[in-house]
Image 1: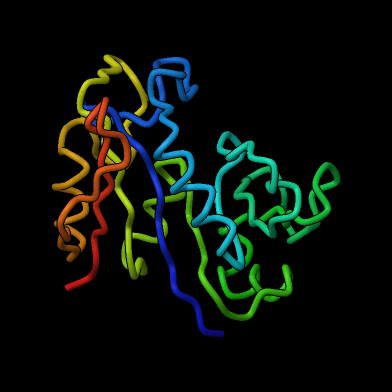
Image 2: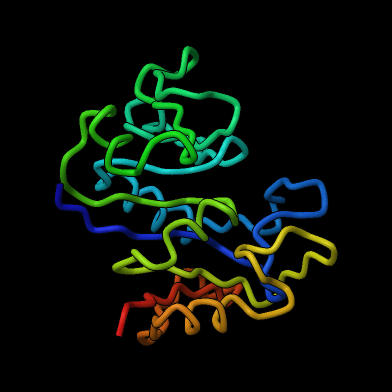
Length: 183
């Protein structure tokens, strides 16, 4: 198996990916970031996320995915989404889940939430951190384990990743994306 593992998240100025009710609010949705995200997922061989994450895009039903859940024992096809494999990482390895999903190579897009991001912290080739500097979500859900005690940037740095120059996705709202790569 040969994978390139990439993470994707947009965060508020205070490092949140969702509000206090664990929902991504409209205030954190920007056309430039949505387009960047959608184009990346269209290139992915496999998408990995938890039960509460889903990109809700036109091509979503066509995409192969692993959905992490602790409610199952064995790898199984999601009865609601035929392209999705339900995966309990306590029962099967990532490689076993990929084999079950019939994906052996390509880009794997990890799209959250915090516990899912954490599982891959030692394996990312690139983590794409989009930031919305004018949005604050007090009491929200931190994008990574350890946020807000540490910033998302401090978490990525602590896992041996370094940022490239940010790329502007939305000039009006100063939304940027930064590629963090292993040093």
